[in-house]
Image (cartoon, rainbow, N blue to C red; front, side, top):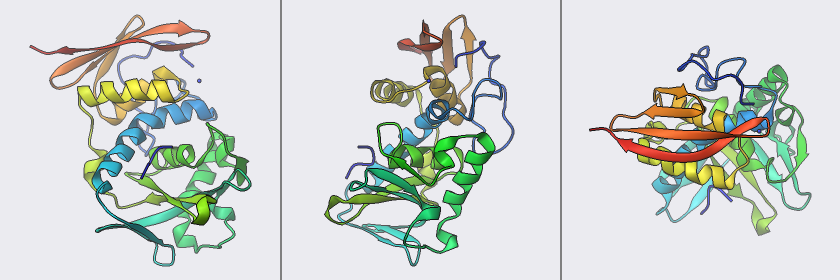
Length: 259
């Protein structure tokens, strides 16, 4: 079972706070453009990469899964979770369809998070959340949409991909009552490993990605020139950036264990 298949402005003062809300770990207003998909996805990835990997580890030994949309329940072996329907991928039409347009006409109680996504898309001007259907590609697909919805627009939600028959597509559901252990902060080693993997496999705004990941984990950090230093309990993680066009990318990562 697999759960997994660009703004660099002025340097911020150490950790300004956003207003309360699920996206409170995003960079402060003026340092992120909420109508820019790459920036919003970058802000969500550290959190959701961590949470989804923890979910995969939790259920890896479970032999079966089943989703009951009538009850709004996902069963993973011995685990049962309440869900919200987000949308679906069709490999026949190579398209994504948001839940509010789904032909199955699921009841409103299963579509709340999909409607939240559309409302935030309209408020932010984030077009991928505003239109019912789009073509599938590396940037826009069930995983990336689910990461943004569960990462930015929900409190402690994760998601699950439910394949449909004969590999014709998949339904994506938000898990609304996942164990709180999935949402605990990362330590320095886990942060380093996750950052290294994500920057290799995803198109990201590196600065927004790193800062948001640290804010979500409530790790203090500060800037000296183009170098960010994050202060974990037992170590500091130092991230050196370099300019790449109008943006900045990670040049080097290292961990310094505290004496």
